[in-house]
Length: 171
Image 1 (cartoon, rainbow, N blue to C red):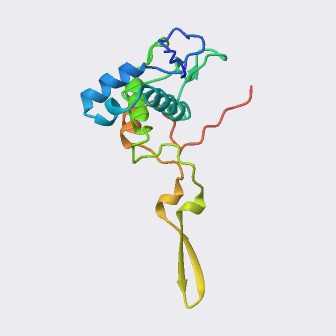
Image 2 (cartoon, rainbow, N blue to C red):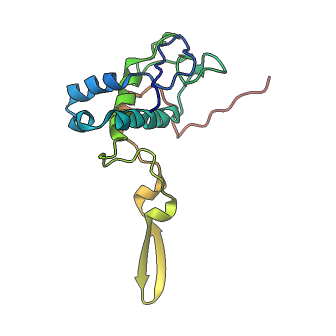
């Protein structure tokens, strides 16, 4: 079983999480997620790592502190939803809560698949009219990657918008 190594803001070598399995357990208990308590330790660890993989794949604003740090945080030039600068050695509490939500959503009993192994074809709707096949995409097929509204709400201000294209000027 993998060992969870927690990043505390000091750029911990080989860090792979922002919270421990037991920390997720406290969060799950506080919010009434009963499936977490009944999972085995191995499943909890795997779910936390899967949740971290999902969180680490999100497009965060700001910049990693060092090129060789294990995780996306700590970050510099990161502002919260109210425009306040986040301390460069801080792992934001809302990020940790988002990791907890992602870990719980990654349990095998969860109905939400954060990283579903699906293609656009899985969302294809076929309509047959008089032996002519007309294909249409389901509205949900626009984004193959499932998401959790809770996770995105927790990370408001920390994530880049998918509707904005960043342009950098040459030096």
